[in-house]
Image 1: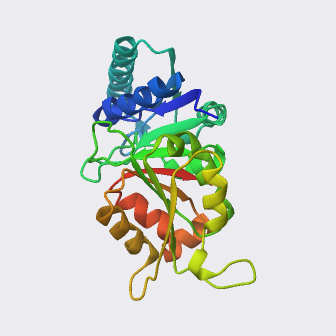
Image 2 (image 1 turned 180 degrees about the horizontal axis):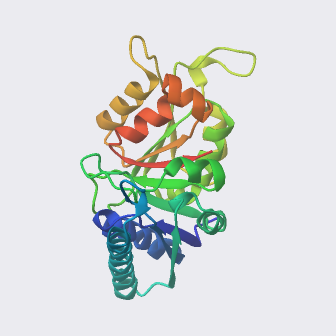
Length: 280
């Protein structure tokens, strides 16, 4: 298995270069085809009091701005594609629903891997992709780039956050092309439990054995959270072990649960310190 179709989600001018760079870097390793995808979002229309009639001048200005951004992102993508000499295509859609629209989700469902960038919190934009939609609707793994990381680097050390869930298993196997090329892959369990299926001391042993049969260099590790959250324990492990990529299952609880009570997925997506591959 290798990634043969990579979908680069290019939502803003600020992160288009980074996303394109990562997409073509991975494509070069696997001889993959790269699709550049952008949603030209139709912004909320300003109304003019007292009759609340749309202001045609403002509407035209917003459309012009959105179109200019689309053209610039396309220029960035095509320039990178030509420089790398990799097979590619460009897709852009104008939609009031942005990246949640059906044509964009349909494009994602036909890709082996989606690549997107974490939004920079100091640069809010209506154009930012809602990654939750892709995780829940596309059925495909998503590689997220921290907004502080602008240049690709070799992925040598990988941490697989393992909790025994369906989502974690899917993420581990979705990441196989990267795991096989890595120098070291650690299966990391936080607060593993003793039950009829496993001993806490060897949590993750089965998935480690399965991955090793694919040629992955695997080690096992566990940790107790004590007075910390699972996400804090994982973040510490990423930092202490100089991890290049985190692989994890996304939203083992529902989106509503995560929204109300928080959760590991949402916390790690907000405070990303490493490349993160998520599957659901």
